[in-house]
Length: 60
Length: 150
Image (cartoon, rainbow over all chains, first blue to last red; front, side):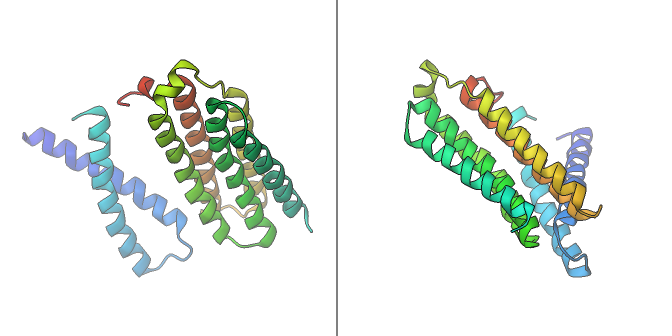
């Protein structure tokens, strides 16, 4: 894995994380610290899964 | 009974009766299209019920249904692809009717909901509902093999 591809991978996961974290924020009832922490963690896991799914469909 | 409840009763009663009739009669293509439309009708019905009973939790049910309904149809399209290849169902009229119903319900609810995160949630639910059913309808009529990576 070259340096450039690593940067691209990190950027893609970050973009997924921001988008999925935004969805979490829109869907919860009350915004508090615990919800934010759980949402950040869940969005992180989902971002990795989303990148894996995207690579499975369109290739690396 | 308020207007929202009446609209939910008409949507769920009329729509689910029509889809039940479609699922239990006719050739395979018609039945698989009808089961796809069942979730496309039930989801707007749940959204109307959430407004009628003032229970926002029903929107979560509609959201889950909007995601899982088209996924279930894609599984049917995959498993029945051999049978559907010879006689692909024509589903554009009912698919776009259901899409119009979902769009109208979501827009009506957005109009009476105070702008905020609830509106975003409604719009995302509507986009998933309409987009998911159009994709699922395309997989049924065009065949899953035609979908990129399918």
